[in-house]
Structure formats: structure tokens, C-alpha cells
Image (tube, rainbow, N blue to C red; front, side):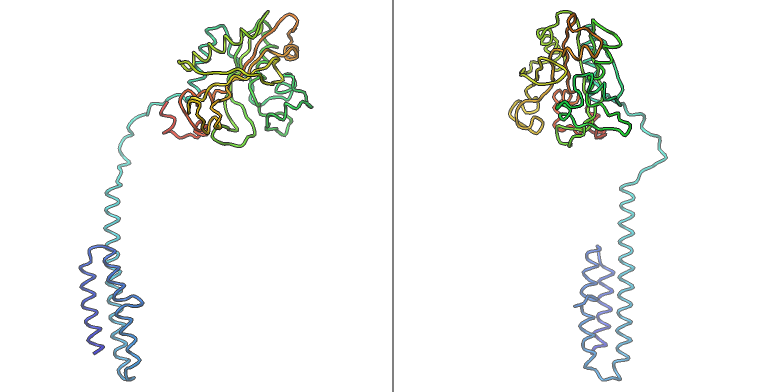
Length: 340
């Protein structure tokens, strides 16, 4: 009886393996025949009821059936795996000997585009474009800008200090000091460049970003001159009317000082992650140059006066192109960069 059952199991299961049309169908047949609760396991439980002289012969038959089924299962499984691999290779085939499609056209980074436009605008107004080192001295970055060692304004900027006592510049204002000392008055200059601050990174803050400083030193420079150049700058960059506000602000290197804010162009003033739900983005701190800064630059404040401003090129680019996360700017994702 058990012998007939084993032979029948061998015949029917081999037939099912042969006709299996998928790996799932094959596995289903294996579980029914060879699984822990399968037919072969049920038959083996009956061996305890047999007399000893029958167990040996039926045991050999059971092992023979099991080996035949497992061998056929593995062969069929391997066949399915090979067919799947061949299909995948055909689907994903690539001829690496073909010539490349050619050099893909590049594009300028959005910050570079904004910087170039501002430089063109200010050079047309008689401003020189100056540059300075990114690794600065404490004297240029703080002291000469009316920020002595004990000044609380130093706490406003989280600085990357180097082991030799130098630092990664926290703003491009040191170039103003270098410009005054090198060129003297009258002076019109802008200084674009990369700056560094030890800040926590989020949608609107980065530890590495780009700024642009501007300065004009001449006789009888007033706040009216400052406002004129700021309006000229904004209309030239955004090519549309933008809502701005000027409010008092404290900066050690200007007196009086102002904050020029722009209504967020991402959300239209309704509030978003970029403007921190306020509807406004701080764009340009500005003001009249502090007399101490003029003196540090070798200029007599009794004879000369000036205005200075600083703007975030990175934030300007975000407003211009509607970019809602500053981290995209230095992410290196070509899908992002090729949009510009």
C-alpha cells in the first residue's frame, strides 16, 4: 500500500515539476510533495506501524523518491533562474563599444549667473569688482570692521577657526577693508565670494554659501544714495516689481544700520520653510559706513563718507528661480543644475 503511494507520488510530482510554468508554480508543487506537511512527510509517519522487515525496503524506496523529486526540482528551478537571467540581460543589454553620444552641453550654476548679472550691473555704474582670500586674519574679518575681541557682535557669527589663529571668513566685508587700503577714496567696489559659518544646515541655512558686499566712499554720501543703488540692484536682478521693507538693524560696521527685506518670492508672503513662515526674507543688511571702519581703511571720516551693503547671492538665486531648499545649491545633482 505505502509502496504504491510512494510510486504514485513520484509519478505525479515529476509530472507537475515538468509542467510547471513559473517558479511560483514549481514551488507550490514542491511544498505539496516535499514540505513539512507534504505528502511524503505524511507517508513517512506510517512507517512506525510497519513490521521491521518491511521498513528497510520501504525506507530505501522513500529515500529514492525523495532524491528523485529534489533532483528534478533543483533542475527545473535552475532552468527558471537561467531563463530569468537571460531575459534580464536582454532587457538591460548595453553595447559598451559604441561611441559616446558626444559632450553634453554644460550650464552655469544659478549663483554664478546671478553674480555675473550683478557684476555687469555695478560695473556699468562705475564699481570695481574686487576679490580677497577665503582664509582671513582676525584683524581683517573682525577688528578692522569695528568688531574688537570683546564685542558681542562676534557671537552673531559662528566662526570656523583654524589652528594657526586664522579663520574661514564669515563674510566678504574684509575685502572692503583691503579695497580701502589699496585704492583709497573715492571708491566704488563690490566683492562677491564664498563665505563660511558654523551653522546647522536646514532649508534656508548652509555652512558654506555665497555673498556679495558693496561699498561706495565719496564726499557727502547719504542714505538717499544707498536707497537709490539698492532699488537699482533689485529691479535689475528680478526684472519685476518686488515688495521690500527697510527697518533699523544693528551691524558694528555701519551707523546707522538697516535691514532690507524682500517679500518671499517662493510663497508670495504667505509663509513657507524658506522665510520661516514670516513671509519675508532678510536680503541685504546695509547702512552708512562707520567712521571707525573708514579709519581702519586709512580714510579720514571727517572728509569722506560712504555706504555699504551685503547681500546673500545664494538667497538671491533662490528668490530669483523659486528654489525652496538651499541645500540643492551645493548638492551636485546634475538634474537640478541642468535646469539653469
